[in-house]
Length: 448
Image (cartoon, rainbow, N blue to C red):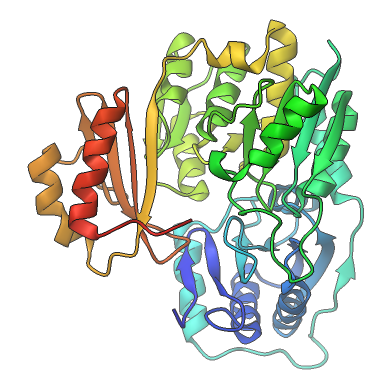
């Protein structure tokens, strides 16, 4: 891979190879041109390449007349909230989210706090391909610094009507994966009155994350053990830029990141009527929780901006993605691990139950999430998939099929050069069959 991956999730690649400081400066300058003169919020995660990319972003923005406002190391949702509250022209989060430490990326945020929408992305690509309109010395922007963004973020979350900062004492373990959760998690726990301990607090000397960045059950064994050893009520596993969260129950079990959105939906709808939106790859658990409260659930293509736009279209205030990304538009229109953690604590306090007891109220469903380095197109796979599953029920983002016990979704990833297979069924044997059939079509899945 020698070029950045460009999608609704931003511009990303392996630093120094498929994503360089020249790329960062060029895309930042193009973004500055479509944003217009004025302040642009800039924050980054903890990657070793972050300062180099930040410097390039500042150069690109200043050279087209923008005024970068640097907030330092900060979670992506913090940057989004700063854009909204400050009235900035937009924001740039320097983070490659769940990708390994040798990757980096720019997540571009519009002035509404939402990742760039389709029209703005098209304008960005036009400006990227065109000649730069560099400013003269008398119009060049100058950077500034802003402090306290994470504190402001947490204060806004804690002030949400459905967040319980009082109630029974609780203890949590935070696995911050050497990322921005180290800034966000402790401040939130203090605000919620939850005792806590922290694991995986820093990056390795080589600039790698202390565990695989994505908070999937197979990678958070240290957190599971720490919850049991400390007698904690809950464990929180962050991703590096703090927009996603996975849960571990008091027995040390990691049920999967799909439960995070389902819990938030169940908590919010118990107090507030609203439609619900999740993406096409999200578990049916969110739909089960929505039906408990008589709510209608809609699905969108994968990607935060797609979920937000579907929420706007349907009037939904709560939703998100099954990767642990909770979106409550009453707070801001973006995935937010602070909202997810606050709602998890609040639900357990209100219902006076353990996390395992809440999980037991849901039917058992099994999922597989695999990725394949398939060189062909989805059209190459479609005839075989249709012979197996019939006509797709949704083609807005790859191919989604409804099966007797669940569903199958096959799509090109927007964050990695792979094809993803996500399937859910009440019968694990059905998933075994689906996996075997896809391996026959696309080869063995690649490692995470």
